[in-house]
Structure formats: C-alpha cells, structure tokens
Length: 122
Image 1 (cartoon, rainbow, N blue to C red):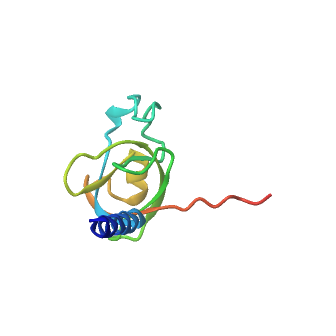
Image 2 (image 1 turned 60 degrees about the horizontal axis):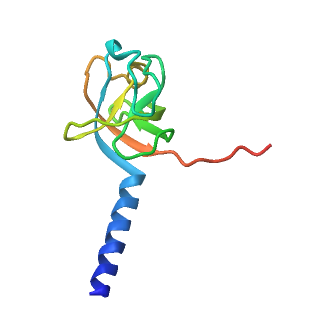
Image 3 (image 1 turned 120 degrees about the vertical axis):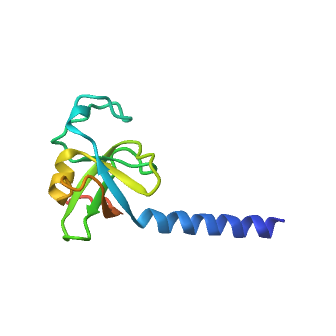
C-alpha cells in the first residue's frame, strides 16, 4: 500500500513539474471595457498593463507568452485567475495581445513559459 502511494506521489509531482515549465494552448484577451474592474489579486485591470490571467500560477509570477505563428513574445505578470474556457491557457491584457500580434484574431495559439526569478547582484 505504501509503495503504491509513493508511486502515485512521484508521478503526480513529475507531471505537475513538467506542466509548470511550458504550456501550449490558446490565448484570448480582455476587452478595453474591462478596464478598471478588480482582478483576483485585488488590483485593478488596465488595458495598457502587461498582465494576464492564469489558472494556477501564483499572483506576481512573470510569464513569457510567445506567439509561434510570428515569433513575437511578451513577458506579463499574473494578476487574475482564468481563463475558464477549455483549451485556453491565458487571458491577456490588450497591450500584451497587441505586442503578440493577436488583436485582429481574438484567439491565437501560444506557448506559455514561467520565468525563473534571478536576483540582480549589486
């Protein structure tokens, strides 16, 4: 019994770790009409901020979102929860979507990578 629990624990840990590295899926973006609404972290959404919503990453996490169709990428901060639509991995602010070149599409395939924090030496 303990052996099976150990195997389940290891498998779960490895799958979560692999998932935390890189995700592929679709991205959408908040409309400008959402500007001023409260986000899940308690702040206010602004369409010119480089922010996103992600289901699992902690608030304040830096995430690189890349559009594989054109190679453009942007680094955003997680400030909200969501998206709650199957297949979507992030909801972006309008500015982040503009920098990725997906404003005209509305929904686009993306690659999401969690940025590792590296302290800047003084």
